[in-house]
Length: 267
Image: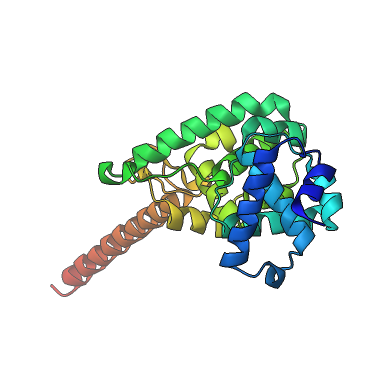
């Protein structure tokens, strides 16, 4: 089945520009890597190239029909789409509104947008001036994580694995970005009484060591030595030190009395 026939089955036969762009992408993929090595057949490759072309040109595309035509499961199709997309060097773009419609979470759209804006501001404020210009928030993982955390905060179910596949990232990167977002914007993305995973806390510290004076120990951060609130560890240490000093003074006083009695007895 050639590209024009596949385009016709997908309802794209009227868009010659999409078909030409898809043909260009398919030739490019043939030159750059072997699609069969990553499990993408010729029909699936043509379908995916048509979707990439349609998305870039702003043409409506029926993914459910594409999945059926590719002969793959939806999950396998998304994985293949991301592999080909990344292999061709085409950036994935995630739109908050489209995600909200796809996952049925339209009411959280303003919270996701406001949360992303706040995260960018706080992240930039934590960086030295020399590094702020190079900060890149265009990667889709930031949008995906903000969407997931907002959905979780508002007690809405979202398929995390599907979201990871849509943004073309890995589970480890998704978790790392999630940790920094909750760390910097717990007021927006955090869940009250949320248990901290020790591995996540370590990830927070390794990934972004910022504003230690403003981070609380119970949030997986650092408490300030000069702050009004001390960690339970420091409190315990201070109490132990106080008990030791009291014991020490009592022992010294007792020894002094014994010495005086001995001195009087020898006269």
